[in-house]
Amino acid sequence: MMTVMQNSPNKPAAQSRKEATHERIVEVATRAIRRSGYAGTGVADIMKEAGLTHGGFYAHFASRDALLAEAGDRAGAEASLIHI
Image 1 (cartoon, rainbow, N blue to C red):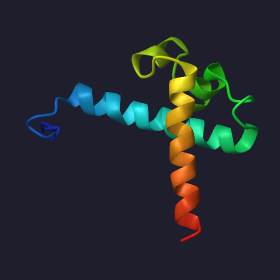
Image 2 (cartoon, rainbow, N blue to C red; image 1 turned 180 degrees about the vertical axis):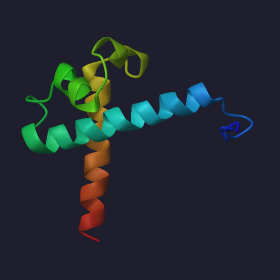
Image 3 (cartoon, helix red, strand yellow; image 1 turned 90 degrees about the horizontal axis):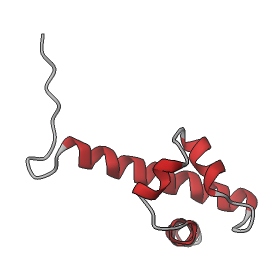
């Protein structure tokens, strides 16, 4: 029996995996910011918790600050939803 992966015809499987990995990194970073604050949140710890290599980080983000900005925006948006 052959398994067929279903992806959007315009989005290759590799792109979907990259997006899922990017999302996982942001989710882990968001939790880390809540737990340890910005100063206590490091790339190596985030990547370890996400189950990824430190070197793989730069395929998704230009810098730690870029990741923390995206994760901080997400944390703020989630906090706003709680107060609605």
